[in-house]
Image (cartoon, rainbow, N blue to C red; front, top):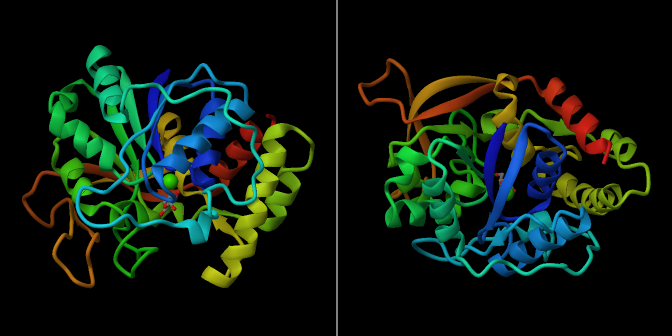
Length: 309
Ligand code: BDR
Ligand code: CA
């Protein structure tokens, strides 16, 4: 059983990761913490609350997190996820409010209160994690594991040729998180870009009238409108769901130890995740990096689990 905190910026693929978490018996979702990323934290928080309302899981606490990156300006991906973050999804008004506690405090309290138990799954920019580390460095010893969707180690980025969105949106936070000396598994574009979900699969998969299927149909409609003009393809990539799946099925992915640093100086390479694989230099690896993925098995598992909701 994995007790997780999902730190997220929903976000269409974030919503898919949430649906997967909620339909996976191996996962106990302890809390959702939100962050500015794909859209502002006001919208990502609203979306998290509305998604939980949609699936009738208003028992799960949602804590609002950071509005700004540690340094510099907010970067959004509304052109990918839609103005409010979830494409054309028409969701119910949230039946719950966020908890009063800030996301950073909730992360610290949960991890420190349950030593060795909590897996922190981060599928947005890493601002909340960095501030939690600054405020309570002992979380590095108390956390079970940190599983992050972010970076591009061997392949190009998706915001710039060097940088992936979650890292580029707050590279200084990512720097703090990678330097913290806690156990990290990093699910990067190197594998998530190899998980295409096709239009045919999406159409077939969302047939039916359940609330979740209707929501996914409306979100996918947006993806299919924008992916072709933006990326020259209509398939979309299952970034955040793959990260979530790797928590409870790590063997979907081939992992390799690596030492990863974030570029914070380069005018053209800001936010690049520069990786040294074992043997290339003396630095001790600070992550287990995703290298290969069994995409077919992953997509099949996603379809079976989320398709039955
Ligand atoms: C990441 O960026 C966001 O737009 C997605 O939700 C995902 O977390 C992929 O680069
Ligand atoms: Ca995300």
